[in-house]
Amino acid sequence: MSHRPHRVRHREANIVAGGKFGADPSRRRMRLSANQLTAGVSILFVLAYSGGFWKQLLAADVPTGARGVLFLVACGVLLAGVNMLMLSLAAWRFVQKPVLALVIVLSAAAAYFIDSYGVVVDRHALQSVLETNAREGAQWVSWRMLGYLGLLGLLPVLALAWVRVDYRPWTRELPSRVLMMLAALALMALAVLPFSREMASTARNHAQLRHLATPANLFNAVRGYLKHSAPAVPTAVAPLGADARAGARATGGPPRLLVIVIGESARASSFGLGGYPRPTTPELAKLDLVYFKDVRSCGTNTATSLPCMFSNLGRGHYSEARAKSSENLLDVIGHAGFAVEWEDNNTGSKRIALRSQEEDMGALGASDLCDAEGCLDELLVRHLRQELRPGDADAMRDKVYVLHMIGSHGPAYFRRYPKSFARFTPTCDSVALQACTQEQIRNSYDNTIAYTDHILARLVRLLQDNADRRPSALLYVSDHGESTGENGMYLHGAPYLIAPDEQTRVPMLLWTSAPFRQWRGLDADCAQSRASAPLSHDHFFHTVLGLLDLQTTAYRADFDALAGCAPV
Image 1 (spheres, rainbow, N blue to C red):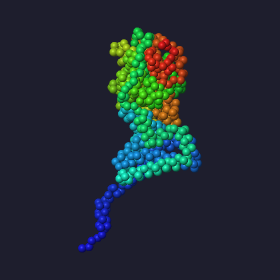
Image 2 (cartoon, rainbow, N blue to C red; image 1 turned 180 degrees about the horizontal axis):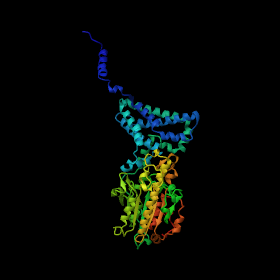
Image 3 (cartoon, helix red, strand yellow; image 1 turned 90 degrees about the horizontal axis):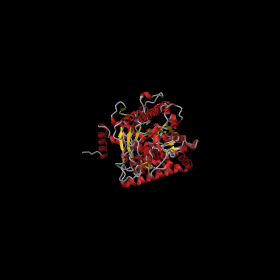
């Protein structure tokens, strides 16, 4: 009996397994080492996910000619090296693919917002995302977003799943990983050395670039958020203004009423009261009030500005941890015996009203003013009218209401006002702002300001109707401003140091009834003389205390916008 060599039988077995019944799928899959996969994904991030970075870099003062081309290549090598260093830390069996899949999807989302709205990704942006509710999040969904998530998210993840990675024992992987990280450092050094002067100058003059390189910006945002965020429930809350009491003028007489209205994304440059040529505030213009023309916000997003302005810290000393570990303005007002109530038509009080009463307007079920996307601010007027009806439990108490508007929240500007308030046309009726013209975006945004004007005027008229029963005042200020395409920027949330005026200059106004002025002894001419004074959210805390004539060691007259206009 003859015997064929083993290799012949082995080849025949392969023919049977692979030819007759089909090739082994695993043999058709791309095979890579863990280091090769890390390097490939790192380069992919530079080329496909950092469009905002390259756009800003090309607009900077970079070298020209052949040196300029080499400078751009060096920047790409530097970014790839940074990515390799970060991703190498997770390049281990059972860890690498899940981590890369998560980073790819998050990077696709970051690329969408950077490319579409000109935003930056930092810890403040991350905080805003984490504090966004499902209703608000759903308003961001568009076909363009789904396209980004599909092309830059789903497809690369499927390719990642298809690739076969040959992992070796950790005793061999560890030296290989160290060598790769050393190689990445060497490449970064070679890229930086010939252009150190240009790179240093570019980084110094264009600080926003570090927030545009994906996924490094994501890692930096997470690091910053974890470093600066406070526990959801602090272990201890320090008392503030526990000695607060009503001044001598506040004893006796009818109960006082102050309505504080917090705007959303309203910018001073679009308020007709401040000189904007469009008639965006025609109803407020007919009222006797003080419009403060030069007010700066504490932050460029709600998650920062709102707790900052209700704290006594000021922008220079504000941190989330410090704010959460201390009582705030509402607590001080409560210590003085006032009833305090927060009415919310936005995403909540950010724990400011934790020790006060808070109501969500969306839970009231006003079908004519609400839909799945949220409620119109008209609901705040309707609810306050019900609250002020005679016979209410707090009708005989001094009280402060805080009304938190949805205001000019983007990108769905067209959903912030009823169709009857589409005064400026044509409008942008899409959340995909890049699909609209600059004129359409500006028209839709200005319509939100016109509707805010209407809501504020209605609130004033409501207080006027109740002025005989309760001396009343209304103080309005927006949390931050908004960009509508100026210099390629949209929405808000830019780092404060580079944020444009559109995001940091906000409208603020004060209306007081005659009985309130008489009770407080407020000199109307003096108050009006402060209209052009440079102010900020730092003044909000102390101006409210002064307006209510509350005596406390937490009050600082030098930060009261009306100090000297009323007796203390």
